[in-house]
Image 1: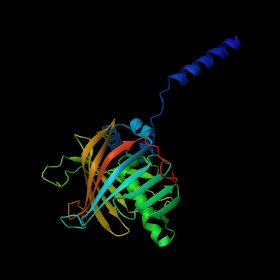
Image 2 (image 1 turned 120 degrees about the horizontal axis):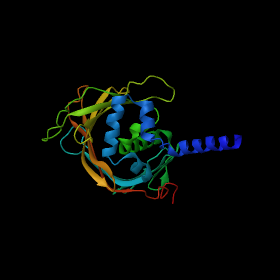
Image 3 (image 1 turned 60 degrees about the horizontal axis):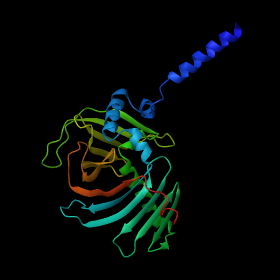
Image 4 (image 1 turned 90 degrees about the vertical axis):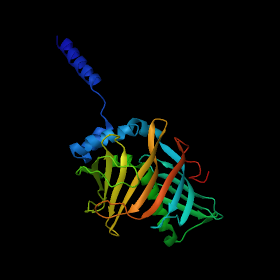
Length: 274
């Protein structure tokens, strides 16, 4: 009798475990770092970009970045092209290479280990390494938007809905605004923030309005040319303007365009000197 009872209990437990749905990593992350309204908006937005299961399978990316530096002027003052290749997940492996120049700068980053060469000659001066390290982090974080809203330490709260001022001739749609702040590792207070304007109809990011306390600068980056690459969407043109606390579009600073995007590339190619 005891044996039969034990068998029934074990069978019941097994059926219960088998019937449990697997945990949704997006729901888990948003439950930990977002208020309920912000979580619902971000979930719909990520689905519009292809859904987290699709993004999580990609692993890595390679593309050509064309950057125009305007510095507040109508015409670009500097134009550069670079090859970028890096991982998309928690592991950091990055390869950046200048194109169309006589003495190309090559940046390799594996976790925290940085290697920089110019025209094949290693760069060892710490003063010349600070910018490549910061630049590498910036380009990787920029391309990973909006998926980096799920990164550990990111906190998301809902803001009032807004219809952003137009950056061109096409009127902007009303947007739900989600503010992202990144908690520093030492748990100190931070006043940096990024407001993601997410279209109520398209569920795509219209722009990102940001503030950096270090230099007291407000900027707004307008996203456009959303294109599909397989099952995932990418805003392939991002124009950054000077602005203020209101988000009004000011002088054009930088335009970044992503071309020849390929996901799932062999990420170690070139990173470790191959």
